[in-house]
Every structure is written in C-alpha cells, then in structure tokens.
Image (cartoon, rainbow, N blue to C red):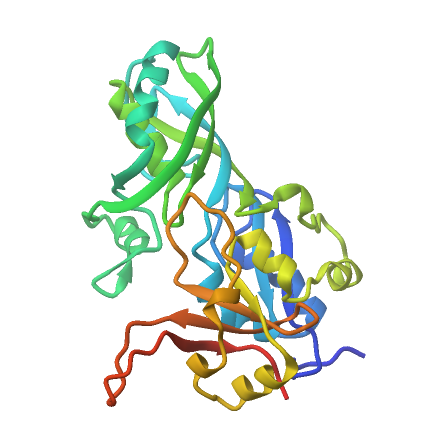
Length: 325
C-alpha cells in the first residue's frame, strides 16, 4: 500500500521526464502524482501542449527548491513554417497573416540579430499576468494585449535545415540555446518578420536543461502503471544534480549541517574560499548549494547585501534548509 503523504523519511528528489506532444505540462505530472501518492509535485519550466521534450520535475520536499532550479538555460529544436502566422504562434492557433517565402540566405543573414542579449515581446497567448489575468485569457476574449519587451539571452541560434514545400510554404529547422524566459514561438515570429515574411512554430522539442539531456528523461508512454519506472528514476538531491545544473556548492561536516538546521548565522559556518564555482558563460548565480559529507543536499543559501542592525554586513542568508534532523 502506498503512503498518501510525503514526510521526512519518504520520497523526495527530482525526475527527468520526456513529455510527449498533445498534453500539457500539468497533465504530464499526473502519473508522477499517482506514483508517489502526493500533490507535492511540480516542474521547473513549462512546455506548451504542442511541444515535447525534457521536463525537470521536483517531488516531495524538493518542490521547495523550484525557485532556485527554474532559472536554468535550455536547449530546443524547433520547426518554423514561413508564409503564414497564427494568433498563438503555434499549430493550435488561427491564421491571422500571410507573407512571402524568404530565401535561406536571407534567414542566415538575419540570425545574428537574434543572438546575444536581446529584448523580446512575449506572445499574446502566454501565461504572463496582465491586470490579474493571464495574457492568454484576455486574448481569447478578443481583448488587445500589449506585452512589454523583456530582456532574454540567446546563446546560440543555428539553422539546421531549410526546405520550400510545393504548397507555398517553407520550413526551417532551428536549434536554440537560450536563457530562462525566452519564448521560441516569439523567436519564430520575429525571425519571420525580420525577413519580410510571417511565420509560426509548427513543432518544438526541448532537448536540454542546463547539463541534463532529453535522452536521460523517462518516457511514460501509455503505461497503465508507471510507478515502478518512476520510483527507479527518482534522483536524490545531491552533488550530481547541482553539477548538472551549474549551481555552485560547498561541502560541510555533520556538525555544520545540524547548526544550519537550527538556524545558526551562516557567516559563522560557511568558508567562502571552499565554495566550488563551476565554469559558466551565463549570469552569475547568486546562491549556492550546501552539501553534507556524503554529497547530499543540506540547504540552499543566498548571497546577500543586507546590513544588520550592528551594521555588520551579512554575506549569506538562508534560502531553504533541505536537511532534516
């Protein structure tokens, strides 16, 4: 008989799921919730219903780590249809505009302007909240939605293939390595308009999240009982997870872990010279993982600039203490 609640001694960790197209990210978690008999399940970055690929799923107490694990860079393979644009910028939308077919040379010449640190207007059909409602909800009601451009980073954008169909459309296969918050649907829209065309994303496959690859993900398919597979695939929160996500970390002794559980001041516990900072070309991560002697996660702590009443600068503050007594 399965336990109905996750307590200190029950399952907690992360799963790599390979989501199939045609279901929402929320629906993709249903089997995980049944397998562990808990609602304490969440992902660290949604995939649209039409999209497929890697989801990083947190289970049990690990759900509390979501805010620190959701900012990772991601990699995608996508297919853009040129010649028509839909209102949702994906296959589920209605056609709203048409455009000419660009040449491959024009596309390749336009790619550099969408690489690096750029400003991007999110799609109207998105989960971004406007006046207390999701932008997509307003758009479906026929209300005009103007979303401000947001800074995102596109570390790499490559054209992998290009083909003009006999039906008056063209299809481009792209590979993208980008920061959190980048909409590949919006990238398809903007790239098409930059070459005097219109376009939308016909397919999207997330191939990686930081150092994790989709080949590591569990594909549940149509399994009647995915529990055995999921239980085997559940990863403990340990050094390997932090390394794959590029999160800096430090190892401490059992006494220090116990002091952290009791909320002792971190500056008295952490020797910053012993922190391991992995090489990175992205933004500096302002937090670190604290590992116990066996390499299991004890806590997430954050770099801080706060000043105490004594005017003594605090270098670290508690994020979440994962360890239990």
